[in-house]
Length: 550
Image 1 (cartoon, one colour):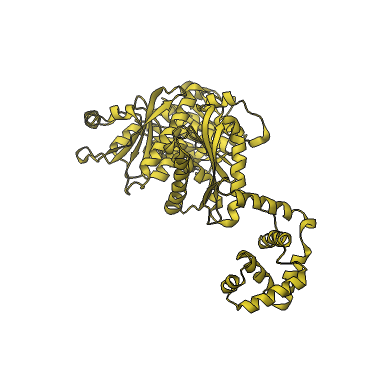
Image 2: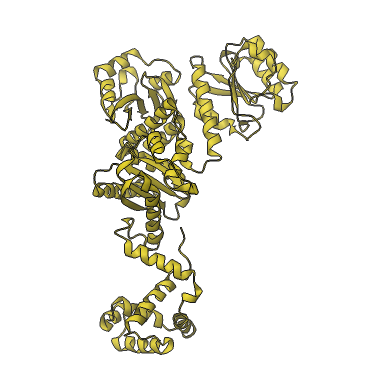
């Protein structure tokens, strides 16, 4: 009964140490590693006794040996020692026989790592998680969208654990564990047994039924706070139901997400993270059940990436969002110096967006995160949520963001144009940071249009006035402040006394400087056309004579 995934030799694979961390110390333990724990794992197979009798046509990096006697394992390992390295696995997973000194000695001689699997662990669950980790790593190495690295349940569980605090288990509607985050020494018996594929303590399950927990999980998206149960040695948990919502308004329960508290308290926004994770998990589980098109590619095309057309009705059906009706597109840009963290922030923003609206969808393009909010109730609520999220991420995570909002968006056919509108806002408001952290095109139209005009001027040397350059060259050569004086005068709309006060000089001194500037440039400060041209040229000079960057 051999099952193989991922062709070996095509990529370096996942380091063994990463698989060990993800599989969890409650399930596995490395007992022998002749080549160290950095060996790459790119393929996995489930083998029984019959599979060991012949060399596989396609060798694998990791072999899960199921129901194989110790004598057969020793003999097989001895045979592996005679094969070249590329024709033998790098790691074998065993149960009770893995602790045998004879087996470990044979593994050392064959240069094969040995991992012992908990005797109560289910092989199908171990294989499923290894497959998931390899698939996710394989996708991530070529993906344009960093969000693809957490679109499977195991990646989602790890992200939720990092952002909510604690240890996460994602279960299906029948309370079978689908995925989980890494455990630590504070994992309680309930978590360990559930990860091993076993039922939790019956007394605790009875308590959950008495409290009506499972009924509440089926009814809605309430995050239920379950106190610790000292008598049963069960620690505090937060739990939320996973529900799939169809376009027609129907709903079905797909499972639940459990967050066990460890040695530290939950994060303040843990409940919000769980609600968002439940919405993301619903799409992941529904996608695996219904097998629609790849979500990442659909999202990128919907937002206008790759310059390709998109079949809007098909996208709407696959993403489970309505084609028509008002929507909003929100773009987030990470402000330097935190720019390198945009991919991780993309996952966090998606969780918060899903908590705000379960039908929201998000993607990362370049160094920006874009969120589509279908069927929003009011523009002020979208703006308020965006402002709150920007403030929350800065306060709680040190991420300094700017956000642009396109609202309203009539239907999905306008999402790509809305994203372009958001980019106009983000491009043009970067220079005004920290003012205008969250804005719409309507609110920042002057800034946007002026910024784009200056972008155009910056690309055309023939549109730059040499008279203004002569003014600043004079200041540089004579140590004067004529340019600054002219800018102050224009900023105060020609009021000499107010401009002089702002510049901390006498009005007569400012008048002298202005006359001197007119003499050098030949530009009349009382002429409306000259003043307009001068304002544009000075604005271009302030930008350093360089085009705006994205």
